[in-house]
Image (tube, rainbow, N blue to C red; front, top):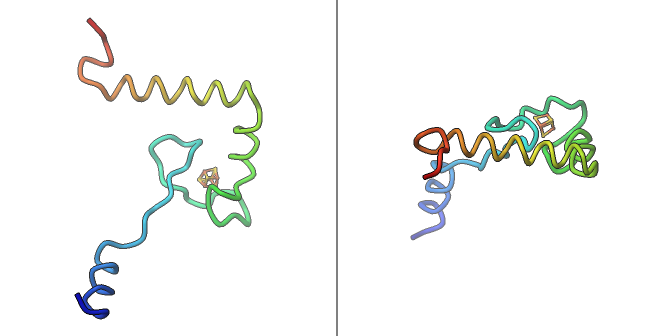
Length: 76
Ligand code: SF4
């Protein structure tokens, strides 16, 4: 594959969209002033460095993952 074809392929695929770790299932919308993404987001830092908030977020992720499973996450 030549460089031109490779560039067209990369452009067709596009850039990956970072997901917001806080707003589950949503892409980062740069809602915090001055951020460039989740990697320098103050809210993400705050949640991830607070054990209680981090555990609450983990619980929300578990609930969301269970809701996405067939039968609403019910196990046999
Ligand atoms: S700026 Fe932070 S809180 Fe806002 S969407 Fe992006 S990662 Fe989430």
